[in-house]
Length: 317
View 1: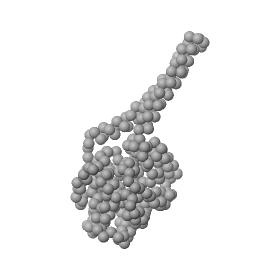
View 2: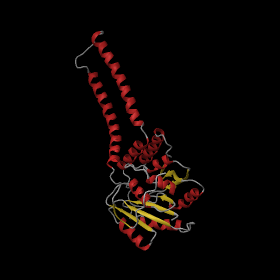
View 3: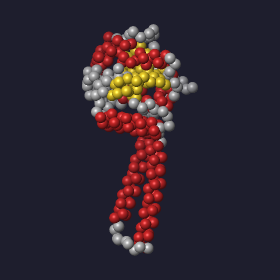
View 4: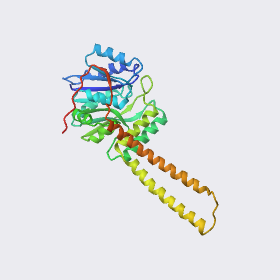
């Protein structure tokens, strides 16, 4: 198989037919002598997405699908596609048609030039609120500044990767997936193409602010220990301030005698220290929760039905 196209699906019944036709129109003329496949991963959709995918699969043998037992999340859906993809190159694309399938031949051509990863970098984002654009811009830049690896800014999961990268991703067992960060961590030769991201073709986005915050936490905790260091430094700073307040309290009590019982600053100091301690405990708790999830070693997802065989894990090198 020359090319696998991984498409996570969550309530995308309005977009699936148009996506399928546009993908076929793009891939059929491409020089792919060994063929291509579509892998649709139904991530617990509540609409007719699964029925549409099964209809396409009955009509076109190149359409493969994985149906989850429930909603496991976008990153896990992409992971399931990577676990079953047979292509020497793999494209990851969402079903909302914001990322244009027509860019795939250019991404694939770059891959053939010797790169292992070619990602699509957003030049503009149409149809998104100012708040979403601002939070996304801040997240990418904060993540880039606090991580020890170079994660490209203004990029999503739309990209093409080689079989070498797919095999490396399949050997990474993290429960809290942040795939674009994992791909950056793997290394190899990587490049990008710029494009203008279109407005969503139909339906409502499944990426709520709650899911975006979870993805941001997964990205930060998976690739940076800066929050832990910040909690440690903050603890030393607060201890220093508390020591100065203690000296001033002793001076006011025994030297200047300007001392009032029930001094308000006592309460301020207690609240300040308590707040900092709670923040530090919360940061540590986020890291411990992710460690706990990995230790339990539960499966990342449960497949309800599929027309794809399960591939063996690649050997360690």
